[in-house]
Length: 90
Image (cartoon, rainbow, N blue to C red; front, side, top):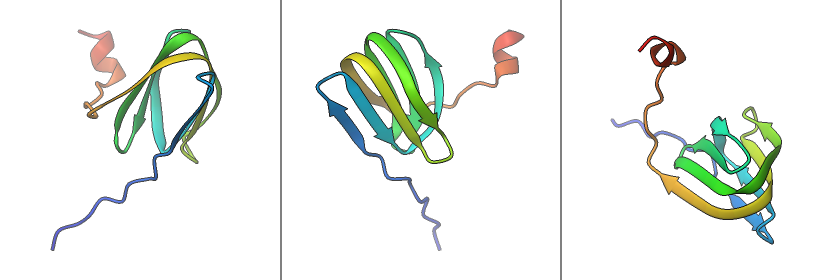
């Protein structure tokens, strides 16, 4: 018998290219004023724009709210993330 992985629902709502709400977020890897990298069960989500600001992040509930001038939302396949110690001691 094969085991199915249960995915969290992933809903993306963009209002006027200024307010973004995402559900199903597992983690946020990096962020600055022009880029945010978030992980969902459906892949890595790259958010691009200007003046980006994370207004709310709750990995417990999987919610992410972003404000700013949003120019792109790009999904890619999840890549295995490196351990922080591997990055430090290369």
